[in-house]
Length: 507
Image 1 (cartoon, one colour):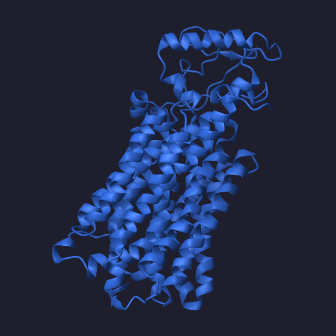
Image 2 (cartoon, rainbow, N blue to C red; image 1 turned 90 degrees about the vertical axis):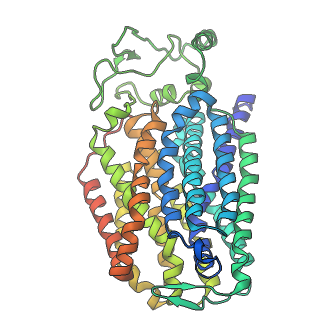
Image 3 (cartoon, rainbow, N blue to C red; image 1 turned 60 degrees about the vertical axis):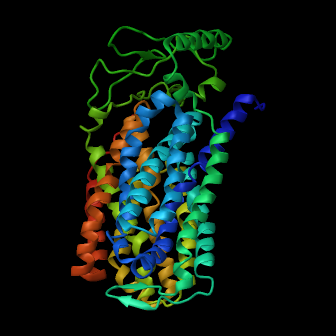
């Protein structure tokens, strides 16, 4: 196929969407950084600094992604896709740079800056990137949703090594034990913590600047935000260029509040859709294959055979009436809770039995290998329809539940076994950033994706608010064994619901 300017824009935009996802690496570097930050708050910061629990940082960061995703539709309607992303990048990098100062004065302010504002910005950024790749390449949306979340995982491999090499270059041992936790008391380690945050922020800033320079708003967003007159003009231009192609014809019966027909077959309604539901807009003249690849609604319909039922997009209120929404919500809650426990404590728990800080940093460094491979695998299998959303969710939940049930015993046996164990945990939990957006797109359709994805992101809001309360209580009352057992029980509940629910898809 000849190289055209439009294809160049498409590929550059998809590459840019990967780069702008750099701040998502916070999820995979925080477990490493938290060990140093917690020591800094406990032993280096002044007395008034310890005005909150630092475990709230990651939970609030995850929870703030929900309002961020929900606000995306409102912002893109007014600013456009790209400029909404640029605004999110400003918020993200200002939050990271600001947190280098707040860690020196207050845990509570660090929770606000590194948790609330950073999480909100990343939620917007994530939704923008998902919309962009699904708009430019709808037929490969699941694969690109996997790759754009694999990039920050791979990036964290480098960032984790940079952080530990900078903060603890001599592999000093955590020498203070208070209750179930261990801390670093060495002044040369503690004084480098704020500088490590600045270093991390600068890497993200550079990648996001390049990413948004390359990224262009996807055709779907550009069309939806254009004025009626521009939309009519685009339709006329499309009609002229499409008259030359006679191999594909669409007949559209366009009456108010009635279903349309595509290729002579009536579009059927899904789930709770009523007869006056909004259907994908299609011009009377056919679009060429080259043009249709840039229109996610048309290309998705074209990719189906004539005898298949065409898809419809469910409105947010209709999504709330479907059982699959609540199963995906519970799936997200269970996976996010397990992800939070791993992110906060894989290193701290390991230090109780493995007196090797650099080895545990190495564990955090190679985690992205497992997550990246797993996400690519999930995305490819779903995109090729080799495995369903339901099967993917069930497999990842089953693996995660089984591993959490034995978490307490693994580091007591062997540190290599613990490394493999944490990698398998990451493999299971990495499905979250593929199954949730892919499930949202396939089960509810593309038209209201940003709002529906925001509703599903309520899982991280639930965990962000309630997680630290339960984690602290479980850890202090039942210890590490109780915390890991509770994580396994929550995963089991989500697994049972997933197995007994039918995942109806519209796409």
